Length: 409
Ligand code: GDD
Image (cartoon, rainbow, N blue to C red; front, side, top):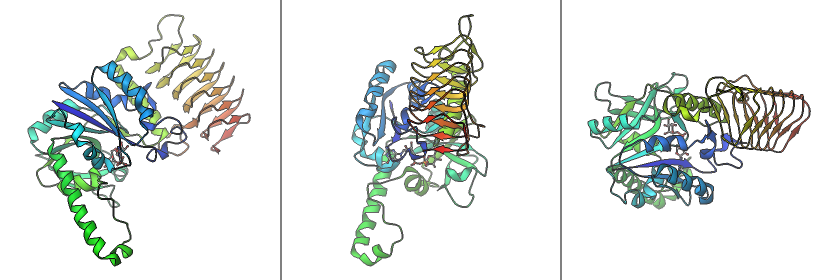
């Protein structure tokens, strides 16, 4: 038996995701028409003998209540949201709920970051993990040497795949092999976290005795129950024959910014082509719009038959798309209206926004640049014949003049 834990973080974590995280917690932001957290959850669902899926975070319970109850009944696997009273770090959060997680005596615990986009090759990872016989197996991938420092960099034994050395976001280059934020552990991981916490407690007591050191200390000591999986567990346990790596050759991205969510939405749409083609718009018959490439359209959306949609477009609930509209590489959120002959390219259009006739909302599509995609926050109105290029527009604004390379506050 196994259980899965997905770390969803909390409201102080998603700040780079503004203005899209004002009303919706980042883990519920739709990618390919499904909440971000839905993708790791459906990967877990494909595992045999999965007893439970837990989401751990410090968002309010009510923010997840609806999603958790609908997904539980849909998948027929119990999915439960566990709320921390405060952030405990990625390992601390796991440890905090150890009794609930271990209730059914699982032999394995899958641990997944919610803000990564990949194919989650969990079955293959589990096989490798059993072969290695260690306490944990980390999913890893090779990235470009220039981008590696945004992640945990690691060195693995090329023959045994043992994790030999681990450094979280190092300033000087260590390795182009990085931590994907997807793990499998045996229940021993709880003992390891306990050890780190006990050690920290010991240090805190010493500090307490010498207040001089505390005053001099440039970084304040972390609370004893705040434990990060990467720095506090992977680093000290590397090279001790307890941790191993499994390298994915498939796609992998981290979703920290709205720009990356457009990219990842496209990656998941492309994956649907292989795993769940029934979710993609077909665009057959003469009465429906022209569909290009991978496109998701919510069943409640109304798309005019003369519109042309795709590739890489996701259209959420109750959206209305008018005649002659062109949509490419974008996410259109609930209750949006796109009027006749408007064009949207490389953009996210926020809930309840409206785009006027012959208007253009677009960007050059550099996912890593700050203004590389255009974002309209909730309830933004773009009037007729207005052009919005490479800009971010905060909620409730009305644009009656064209803008370029601007953040409209
Ligand atoms: N419940 C809970 N409580 N979740 C948390 C907490 C916490 O206190 N702190 C972080 N998380 C969640 C975040 O929401 C995210 O899903 C995951 O844990 C990791 O977040 P961070 O600890 O902020 O690390 P990171 O995302 O910058 O980097 C980590 O993931 C990368 C892969 O995406 C590191 O492990 C990197 O090494 C790794 O490359």
